[in-house]
Each structure stands twice: as structure tokens, then as C-alpha cells.
Amino acid sequence: MEDDCRPLLGPDPTGESPSHRGSAGSLDIRTKRPFYVEPRNIVSDDPQERISAEAAILNSRVHYYSRLTGSSDTMLSPPNHVIPTAEEMYVYSPLGTAFKIPDSEQAVKNPSIVTIFAIWNTMMGTSILSIPWGIKQAGFTLGIIILIFTGLLMLYCCYIVIKSPKAIRGVDTSSWEFPDVCRFYFGKLGLWSSLVFSLVSLVGAMVVYWVLMSNFLYNTGQFIYSKFKHDRNVPFICPYPKTHPGRNDSMTSLCGSSSGNDSSGSSFDHYWSKTSTIPLYLIILLLPLLCFRSASFFARFTFFGTISVIYLIVLVTIKASHLGFHLEFHWFGPSQFYVPEFRLFFPQLTGVLTLAFFIHNCIITLMKSNKNQENNVRDLSLAYLLVGGTYMYVGVLIFAAFPSPPLSKDCIEPNFLDNFPSSDVMVFVARVCLLFQMITVYPLLGYLVRVQIMGQLFGNHYPGFIHILVLNILIVGAGVLMSMFYPNIGSIIRFSGAICGLALVFLLPALVHMFSLREQGRLTWQSAFFHSFLIVLGVANLMAQFFM
Image (tube, rainbow, N blue to C red; front, side, top):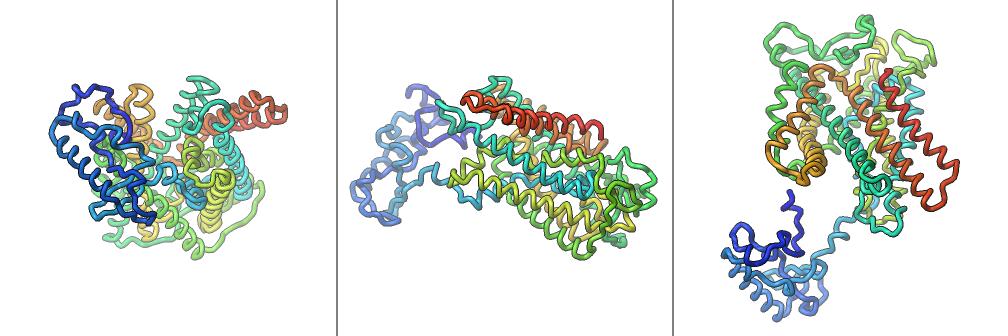
């Protein structure tokens, strides 16, 4: 991976003298550089400029150097003064034309619409599957209010993160990320705090992915098996798996219980169990993928995330149009088929939303690619509006369309796809798409965890196969254990969101902002009170998860 990122221009990275660079495996990096044509040798300003005879002669000379360097002696490589910097680089074509290499800083700039959808695509993750469950836990009316309020708070904290590098004066912060800002204000404690809590969010996401991959793989097998059994298809089910330890058992009498892990005594059910065997089968596929030295191959499939989210929106729309809305408003009192509009379990929704709106650890990188930097705040706000609208659309439609009666709204699962039978064709397609997406994204998340941990401990992203294998076994083991003994993605998401949100959303951004204002002499008691209140909200959000 390091070789892929090494610049084509620059001094010899090894720092060795020419006499120590004679081996065939260490050819000078200059032999890999593109051919250079001086601007004065370009005849015209056409899109494909013709090259003068002088430039053609120079090209032949460099090719001569290249022939000499085909041997093991790199001392005959073209000297540095022959091939200048990247901004003056042209690529010579045998057809007699030259192509200007665009400046790398300008080449990666994106218009606002691309930046907005990049943020939307990055934020859209597994949390969308738990939004209807979170609204059910908070109550329909209170859930909508909390979704809007939490989105606004997360947007403001994200705005603080974006502005934090620019608020530092006298230092070049153009290449800084938020951990660098934390290190500037709080030293190594700030740096390690941001890294540790960033790892919590990544590892939490990987655990959720393992639970969901086990779920989707199980239901995919069940779909194929049901085609041979000719099972009767029903629009909605209340599976009631072992993911709600605190739920009243009498609830199953109100719902069509069809557990996703029922055992009918057949050999198929014995070897194809969602919590006993499927999590172990995934080890055979995913553990070798985690050990790849580079994750660039899997990055090519990230567009499946966008396709999966769009398909989920279409699926929800079609299902809601077929089922219609089933709503009754009981503000505080209980009902047989409906939940109150205001419930004391609302912190479960705030925990889920903290992770659902979480992008603070990479927002600076995403915004650097925005072509119009003066529109960063506007584009960030529009992106959050789009994300919040997507969560609202999916959450409200699934909750409202859930058929009550005969089923109770309390049957809505932490993964709302579990409320559809395995034999549903449209849901089967959604599960297959999400399964393939997660199989390709899971190694990317593992690579990010490896880079952060190994880079800090050993100064090398790949210190050795044994180191990587031990780390990957620990990560995979956490996912397998949770899939087998507590496959409740709602609880895993809300705890991960509350833990990483405390540090990276509320605590560190608020402290950084107050320290910055104090250094500028602009910190008022109103600002100090408001940002201290944000920290209190983060602490309360985390503490409340332990009482739900």
C-alpha cells in the first residue's frame, strides 16, 4: 500500500548513495517518471499540442537512459534536472502529441452536488435499518422530534469540526485532520482520545456488519429452501428472536410469531442456524479477506452502498403503498396494538441517531475536495438535510405501514427487514444486495482499524502477517460472539454511537471551540454555557443507554 502511494517525483526515499542502489529490485524511482516536455517545445495551444523536433530528440535521449537502466545499474538513470516538477509535466505520445498532466489539487475538486451526495453516501449505513425501531422505542411523535433535534445538534458539532483547523493562527493547517487539531490543543491525550473513540465507532460498525451478514446470509438460505417447501408468504411477521430480553412474553400471543431461528428438527435447520452456525461460516470467507495487504480492490465496490440505499427506499415505498397507514395516537397510555406517542425509552433512539449522523472523524477530508470552499457550510447543511430526510422517510413509512392490528407496533424489530418473511422476493433482493455490499466494505473497515492501530503502535501499517492475523482474529471474534449470543443490532448501534459520540461529537469539538474562542479573546459566558451543555448532553446520552 505504501508503494502505491509513493509519489513519482521527489528525492530518493531510501536516502542511500548511488553505490548502494545497484540491486535489480531497487531501481531508482526516477525511472518510473513520465516524460517531460518543456513548455517552449509545445508548438501550439491546441487540446493536443504538437511537439517540436527538439522535444522529440529529448524524448529519444530519455528512452536511451531507460534502455541503460534496464540493467541493475541505476546510476545511469536520467538525472533530476532532466525531469522537473509535476506541475511542469507533459506526457509524450508516439503519435506526436503532448498531454498536460493536471495539477493534483485541482484534479480532485468536486462540485457542490457531488460533495453533498458523497456525505450522504458516507453517512448512510446500517443505522437506517434501526430507525423504525428507534422511533417505536421513543414513540411516534417524540421520535420525529428527537430525529430533527439530534440532526441539528450533530450538524452544529460537525460545523465546529470543519472550522477548527482554520481557527488556529500562525500554523499551516491545510493538511490537518481533527485528531491533529486535538493534539494541538490537548497534546497526546487529545490525539489518542480521538483515535481511540474513532476505533470504537469502526469496531462497533464491524460487529454490526457481522451480525447483519449472518442475518442476511441466513435469510438468503431460507429463501432458497422455502422455494422447495412452497411455504405460504405473508406480508409481515413478528419474529420475536432472542434480541429483546426484557420484552414481555405475552407479546407473542398478539403477533404472528415466526422466529428466524426456529428449529423444526430437520438437518437443514441444524446446520443453517442464524446464531449457531452462520456466524462461524462467515469466518471462512472474511478472515482471509481481512489479511489482504491492500484494500484498494474492495474500494471499487463502494458504489453498492448507494444502490442498496436507493433500493431500500424503493422497497419501503412499495410496501407502504400496498399496506397503507395504520396509526392511532395514544399520547401516554398503553394500547394493545399501538405504542404511546411519548415513551421513556427515547434514549435508545438518541444513541442510534448519534451513530446515524456521525461523520465527524472524516468530514474535513470530504470537505477538502469541495471546489467552492466558501460553500462548505451550505453544502454540509444540505447534506444533513438529505440524510435526515432519508431517515425520516424510511422510519416514518415503516412505522406507519406496520399492520396494527393484527400485529402490535411493538413487534418492529431493530432490523426492520426481519419483519418481512424470508420468502419475500423483494426483501430477498435487498438482503442479497446488502450482503454483498457488507462483504466488500467489511475489509475496508478492517483496513482502517489496522492502519490506525498498527500505525500508532509500530509506525507501519503492515508490521507483519502475525500481527495482522492476531488483530483480525480479535475483531472477527467480537463479531462472532455478538452474533451468537446477543444479535441485537439496535443495542450495538446505540452503545457504539453513544460512546464515540460523547468524545468525537460533543466533548472534543465543544472543548476545541471554547479553547479557540478563549485564545482569540471572544469566549463569552453564553457560549461557554451552551457548549458545556453539549458536553452534558453527550454524557447523559451515554449514561442513559445503561438503564434502557
